Amino acid sequence: MPIRIGTSERGGTFFTQGEALQAVLEAEPALRPVMALETQGASIANAARLHARAIEFGFMAANWVPRALRGEPPFTRPIALRVVAPMNVGPLFFIAHADSGINRVADLAGRRVVFGPERSGMAQHARVMLDALGVRNVRPVHLDFAAGAAALEAGKADAQLQCPVPNAVMTALSQRILVRVLPYGAGELERLLAAIPYYRATVMPRGAIRGLDADLRQAGVLNLLVTHARIEARVVAAVARAIATNAAALGRLNPLFSGLDALVREVRRDGGSALVIGGAEFHPGAADAYHALGPTP
Image 1: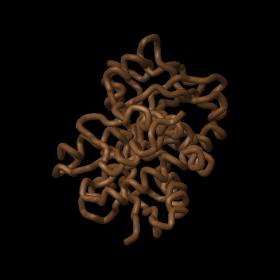
Image 2: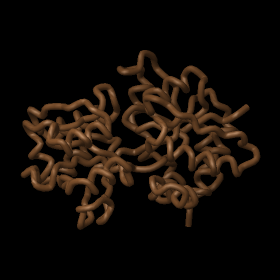
Image 3: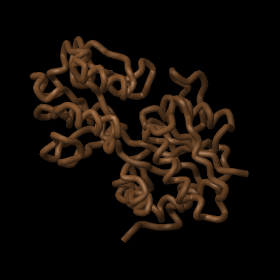
Image 4: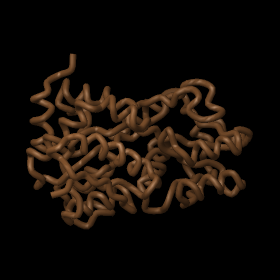
């Protein structure tokens, strides 16, 4: 039986990560064949496909997992998801024209901000981030990454929420116009991280895009590989073990996996308690694999 992994739309971040993960897992004879499948709708659709037995594993942003477990909108029923492994922490960052007069996140009040498609994960991120910071009267613009970047370039939007780095749309936009990645004011990032448990502090490194001349602290969303509770423990254990022992190789195959090494060390050290939120649990097969590997030196 093939191992099918739900990703995202072709060319999306989960899709490119899925291709790298497929290459690593296919090196394990016991896991072949492995297929990284395109998914329109990414996290939300992958949860639904797991429920429908259409895939065995799927990429999901951590913020959607508790909602799926409880059957809260946009999910119509509880889905017995289980965590397999961390994938990465993807920086979420607001950008604006460098000469717009929008200098920090709080300046987005009253502005036209590209959130992402109306029911997308990005739109949910934009709403909860701005609400947590008390940034009011923002006018949402519901466009995808590429269309949103075009609207910003044309002056039809004032700012945009982007994720992650590297990001082909963001890189191309920053070559066409000079953009500013908006910093947080004093204490604002700490307040955001305290309010939203599935975010983590991360750093956008200097030079990540044109115009970013210094490291900049931002919030990042934790992305996970998940499965369904019914998937056999031996299969899940083999996948978790392959990821844990090839974390560095995944980073070389795709820079979106940069930092996976550190996340895996955290799981092996403390069982990953900081990575499971809102009632989510590791699949027993994954937990057994990490226990058998033991903590890293």
